[in-house]
Length: 95
Image 1 (cartoon, helix red, strand yellow):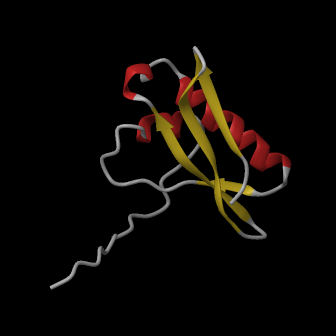
Image 2 (cartoon, rainbow, N blue to C red; image 1 turned 90 degrees about the vertical axis):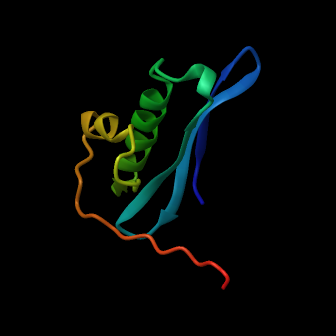
């Protein structure tokens, strides 16, 4: 786990992002979350941009992953991220 950053409004945490998986080459941008009452205000954009800059300062490549159809994909692309591949997610369930 790495650093986490947040934005507070009226003493309440309303948006966060952070760093999770790390190797010698990259650091994952993770936990991009904004409270529903505070969406569409550019908070996630600010946090992702800040987290990305902090990763680049370490001379590592910032990466992130998401599900197909996530409404944030255009934002990620505006911030310089590109789709590299589709991944299949397998979920375990008891029989």
